[in-house]
Amino acid sequence: MKKVIFRIIFFTLLLLSFNSGFSQNLPLSKEAKISVITCGLGNESYSYFGHTAIRVADPVNNIDVVYNYGNFDFRTPNFVAKFAKGDLQYFVSARPFTEFLSDYTSERRSVYEQELLISPDLKQILFDKLNSTLFSEDRYYTYKFIDKNCTSMVVDIINASLGQNILVKKGNTDITYRSILYPYFDGHFYEKLGTSIIFGTKVDQLGTKIFLPFELKNSLEKTTFQNQPFVSTSKTLLSFEKEMPSSWWNNVYTYLFILGFVVLAHNKIVDKIYLLILSLIGIFFIIVGFYSLHLELSMNYNTLLFSPFLLILIFLSIAKNKRWTYRFAVLHLIFLVVYAVFMINKAHFLIVLPMIITSGFVLVRVAIRNKKRIPIII
Image (cartoon, rainbow, N blue to C red):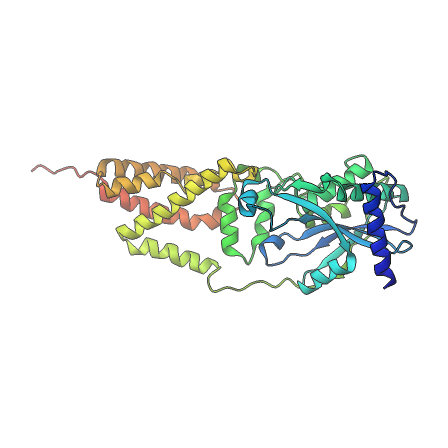
């Protein structure tokens, strides 16, 4: 009960000080510790990559608080549209560490802690910045998948508190963001397929920024500050084995079954439905690419496979315009070859390869059906 009262007093004092315009913050004791918290992976879409937060624990002042930059409000008007567009506002919050740990216990997700080995003065600066952000308009930020998220915000505020970019990415700077992300979708096949085809050229850039929780954890372990380790040895606060989901439909087998059916059916209607689905996906990619502020969704070369012009091919086929149906089929076969060559060194090549093969079969059939036959004169 005593700790609860102290927490209430702590947050009340902070709120009053900021609202009244006072610049002096609550001083930390010499016993205070500030740590980076890394949370394990989950099976919900928001938890695929883990989570990062900052813990401030000061036993003298009875403070044990977690600052979390990964908050958003489902009640935001036009939530889905704002999320898709890329202007949804995320915000920082603070809550008791015991509540934070209880949530991850119930979710059966591991939690790791790395204490920052910095001076009391730097701890105070970081603590003040955290509270300054918490009780100002700066608590809100526009979420960006790579550039601004719960992990990158923690990196930014730590570096700002130190007055220099001490915390930078260590390791895996020679592979792309796409290659880094790819393994996180293991066990979630259609999510892996969906993100593979909706992301454009930005995720094919070299992953030089820290943007994922376990990248930060790894970089902290390899960072030095003033010729000393920057963090203590990682401490495991919760340990759970990640449960791999099992689904009768969300797996590679249903994917291959559907595509195999399209290839083996050898049916005009099935071919048209398949090409229609690809074209509609391509139209969606183009609309999202122009509409969204998420740079990860722009410049999407996967539209060579999911070509919106397939819709024209379908209309030409229905109109029985054999000459132009044949030409559009050949054009898309060229697109397919270019796409396949371009994709060979990409992380998602194997997952789209069955669609490349299926599309090849379908387009060849369409071309053969509509190729102008030259009469044989005897």
